[in-house]
Image 1 (tube, rainbow, N blue to C red):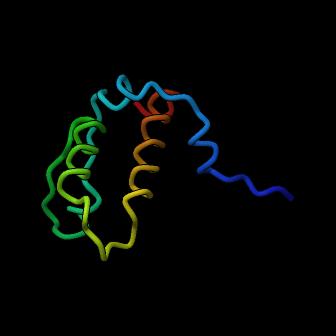
Image 2 (cartoon, helix red, strand yellow; image 1 turned 45 degrees about the horizontal axis):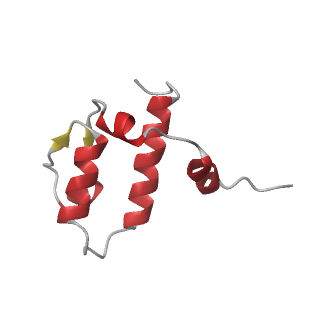
Length: 86
């Protein structure tokens, strides 16, 4: 039985980065949510990506990596592009 690798499927799928990452969506920072109960809500994946890259670029000690968070954000963008999420 062949194992399907989700990461390769996500990397191979085409995505209009600027359009999808700029669309309105309510998301929170996984790093901030892991530290405190009150976190800021970001209204686009682009603003959340900027926040993570600038505020949490050297953070460690979390149950997830920066690459894993990036992969989840890409999956969310693809879900919006494929109209799985609104």
